[in-house]
Image (cartoon, rainbow, N blue to C red; front, side, top):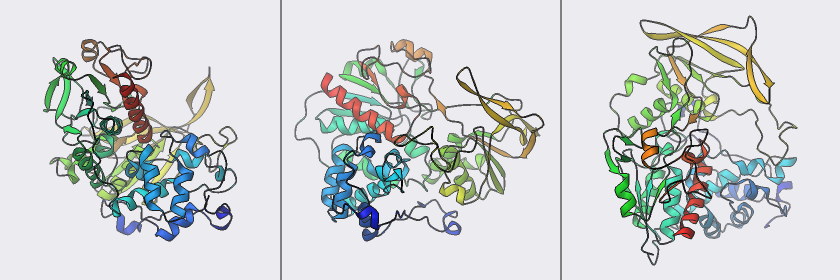
Length: 482
């Protein structure tokens, strides 16, 4: 390493957020960038640790120590050369990844870990600034054709690597633009959509073909719930025209809640709320006011990242106040003994959205909704205790702990499942596992030899970085197979 003792001299310094009073009035990204000198100092903290567990923890097997050393030396060209070999979209994960690598950083055993995520973002943005990221179409095509259904992180990753390997790749996307959850789920204040467009433009110039408003289906069934009114491309025709069809349709079926009063107005799925906002900013949606949080008492049910995104979006609408509840207990401030290094720990986190204004409550379960004139007005909740029964966590109501929360907009942010329409599964000769995901055999191929699956559609809802990694692995498997 450039400075083996750098971690002894330099303390961890993260990029700051723009002032709250400024950022809640717009949808620009909240995170600022450090100077080149500060970034080089942060890269110097990477130790000569012999066994880089950051590399082990990263789904993409990123080579963190090597490009940290290049950053420290001011060799941005070398850092980018290393990064681009393993990672197709560091501009995405550099903004939205929870940084599994940092949880496994050896320095983090008894100190604060290296700022790996932000260093990664610095490399890719510096590469764009220096004009290093340019279209590099393959020198030779192999004559094989692959169709990809779904333009989210997994589909884009598979397309990127298959195209580099010389395949002719066409990505079919049900929506008006590609990106999937990156575009229609993650708020602009975390990921500005210009960075997706910038990458898609490069991929197009490299030879990847994108067809939007195109749903893959057969008969009256089709993948893609967001592309209603889009052209339905017959999957049987694709099976004839392409050597292989890869399904990367994601896991976008939101979990619901079955309690009294669920039918009331003003109870909205989080992804619908976030998607409408992103579409409004992209001038795709005209009826956004139907789910606006302005001057409303907002309750977010679910304590994860999607719930946090709802908090930030509601604050930008001008919500009267925002409360976020979570059925799980409040996580500890520090890593617990049951989750020792280098495992990923469940610890208390405060996002930029929480800092903008939000009351948070843990160990709270929703019992029902009450309304007036068909619209929700209050939510009945209670405190619960998490106990283990027969190896499973169950939540038991604490007697006498019930209370009400006023809310005229409730956002359900409880995660996602994946349910493919049975008719389409049958017509494609696909099988589902016990969780409702597409069952794959061997690596990524389904029970239909010409149809493969990757990403959340086969693994269930997970992280963007895992979807990208699965798309990459699928591309490698397809290349070996064809």
